[in-house]
Length: 287
Image 1: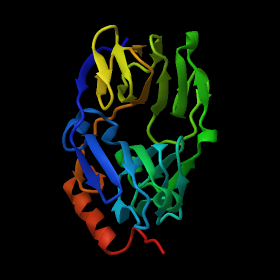
Image 2: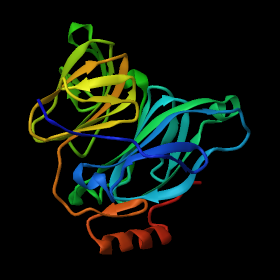
Image 3: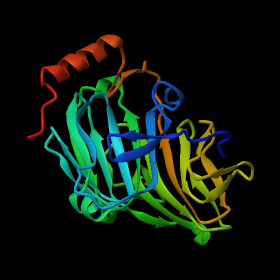
């Protein structure tokens, strides 16, 4: 089993635009430098929105050099981007955007959700691209709940949704550049589970609800990020209550991380070029 290195406590909430109250669990200027290929993790814990006619979210902005993955647990999100991608995701759906060589997009609460109000809960993860892939064509995937494989854990311990990677022969719905496993794990109270994950990978999980014991040792609860050593081939968990986790596991790579705002590249010169490309309209636009 992989050794637990630490339980990282969540940060204070802040707003992204006027629609996303998030806790930045880590980013590429801090802990994200140790967690290749993962750069940033924002967690929008359950938050009630009252009915409104005001458009809530984040307006048009660029990205380059990585992929963004948004997992919706409650609420609805609408997306449009300069690759021609877009759509609506709700509870159980995922959007996977490859910024690659540059993309412009916007994210807002759906019209229905804005009008009716309700609770929003989402996670956004940034996954780095290798230098050779940072010039990839921008793209977008909508992964609806029905497309994501749902697998039962042994001994009635719970279930796994395989968003990316593979579990028990079931391959995830996402097409990825970087080899990663991204799983929604639901554990039943007082049940134990061993999750097989590759030796050498960066491995961690975010607790979305409930409480779990890790390797019969430390406990992690809502908003906590459990980070593991790369050596070893799995995790041993026991649910202290019904619990929901987002497991993130990926093949690390040792390349320079130079980030500024919405761009993550390998050098300062590449960052400067990204800003120039955006200003010159080379990342496209949204009609």
